[in-house]
Image 1 (cartoon, rainbow, N blue to C red):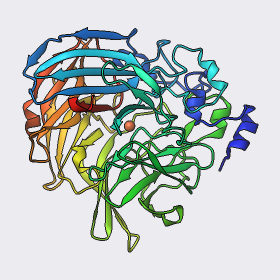
Image 2 (image 1 turned 90 degrees about the vertical axis):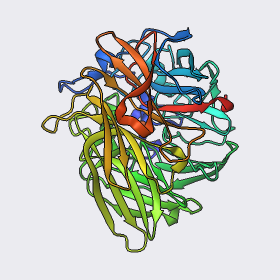
Image 3 (image 1 turned 120 degrees about the vertical axis):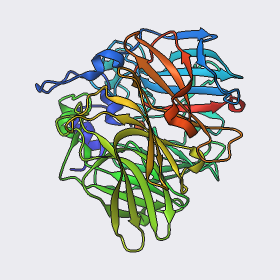
Image 4 (image 1 turned 180 degrees about the horizontal axis):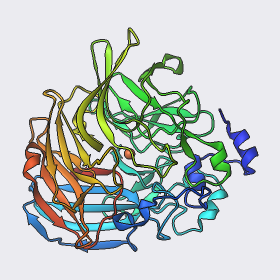
Length: 479
Ligand SMILES: [Fe+2]
């Protein structure tokens, strides 16, 4: 069923405004279902840390490559109240480690200073403004700005010197929608391609910001309804949207469900290919077998086809939006733009998530991908079940794994290219690893060319880093 903003506001009895429902209801509601919830985000290393931290001259095991100069920073939810009613809700906290000439100069954990931080969350039901989002998903460096992204609203500009929040950033007043936490930057043009989705019409808007950070295109698009769209993909000439069967539920929103999106097996499941320079009518939709996808790894063009590599779930949230007990596997989608044919091919039998690449290959044929391996038993996963890292060779179809010692919990690893590198995999993988026996975290630095050999350096952190979402690398020359 389609909803426009007016109908929603009539039903909800709220005032005018523009925001997605996650930012509207974030952290404010009481769970309405009586079904027993696993609430995994209320235990262990999912729990938030208590307050902000700053430390200098960190201890290091091994040797940090002297060419690795800059800031690794990662975003994630850290509820200031101590807990929230959904894993995705929780105030954005940035965890950053600054590396310089082989030294780990500092670590900081700082909240993104959004207007709703430290506020009574019921205040969210008031102004319904796009800056009222938790900004807890990812970061992107573009146009001379480091942006913290929350998917449900506008970005916040972050100072890479100390992770302080400068201001909400709406592209000089031009951005009229929320902004995905997964924009793609074309490495050849510097153009940032992104989108915003909403539970009101237009449900989907495509944006481009040029290399200076100026918003130069905003194109409302037609979809079947208000679907949750976490990520998309980009090739040299196209962008690819994913309209999948996790959709907004008005009935759940009206019962103040903390995250009112549901699995709807009757909803469309398709990818839409749009020329970057196209208009809305140019979208070409491809029905795909039922699935859900949080993250794409990369996409590119070959012949008449667009190739999209993505972490594919058979289904998601079948038992509610706190049901993450579904493994994902890397699959290759081939969409033939001339014939309309679709093929889906499993790439690897290892369950994985958080796919990454050398972003110099974004949108182009590429050889290497990276990810977090997930442990699966009888088709079931534990919520705290990441087991290590994996490197895919997309040309040979092989993979290489780094399995961590029992008990250690790895998080997303971000690929940082070697400044002197020649090959696509010349670079480093940076990710936080949690050790429950000491309740502490390290930043692991791995050589991507020899992933299976283990970390070449571990930066010892003074506090644990809770499980979170996505990181970014800011080279020293950009700080
Ligand atoms: Fe994500």
